[in-house]
Length: 175
Length: 175
DNA sequence: TTTGTTGCAAAACATTTGCACCCTG
DNA sequence: CAGGGTGCAAATGTTTTGCAACAAA
Image (cartoon, each protein chain N blue to C red):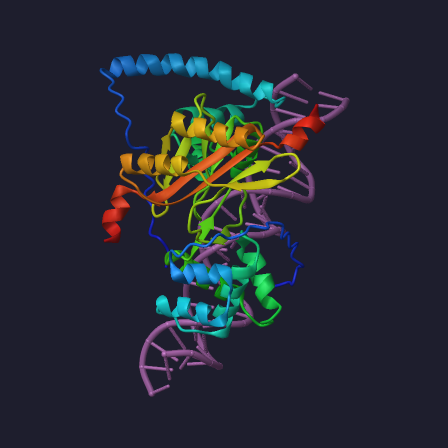
């Protein structure tokens, strides 16, 4: 009782330039250009069969917005695979998450968001007034986080760090 | 592929050494009395009417385990208010969260957990397998966050920091 | 009285699963 | 051909809501 092609809002705003790094080849390739071969390799690396649906889902993940909900991914994939099922999207997403290719993030609100597991953790600094988002990376913070996890016996697998505040422009406006 | 019943453990690391049961009882009594007044105050501060149900819910939050799910709070409150509905619990929880008296912590697909917003700010370290949550506070991280914001000209007003990983127990399980 | 609250049940949602059929390897 | 993969629908589990009865201010 679902499956409407509700138009997605599509807020592609981030113009992030990816600086080169040669960490994990598969992920890198997936993020840079989502050519079919790379996508297939990812599936094979996970011992999964290659199907059109999976390629489509991976493709959507690769070129979609940074954080997409399962619904958004489904909508996007529906355009090329009208008869794809919601379950298929969820199932693959789960598998990808289990294998570390995507990270499942649940912030505040409900629907889980998925993002390609970032090579280096990048976090967000967001303006609560205009919505502007700045990405940043701070190695010191990362290290402290690892330390906290380790001190508690945890094996750290991910994190969410979002800073909220007023950007320079909005600070002026507000005064 | 469901995770089994996650036995949501308590926060680790609490070694409050309390001596005799009498002292505990006394303190509890004092605390309860004090609580009732502050609980009412909390409601009034939010311009909400004071009802038995709300006091009970707040009380459960105040004395219950650090992180309680709505269901747990409901169960607890049910003991003194057999006919309370969980809609009431959810409604108050939502109001409290909106006003910052309570913080909603969501992890994985697990039900949201609530805690009275603590005086001293702290962040969360959560196990992605069993849902166990550990609170921590790290002044160095806080400072670095301020620094990042300042460097970008932002006026920092808040943040979310959640670390995800596997707790010691679940690490064993998984191997 | 005038609103704000409550319980109940139904509704909304997000996500998962059972099952028969289909396709990759 | 075997076993994984898929769509569909139904099932879950959590949180929200409509509504009439009710209670606090």
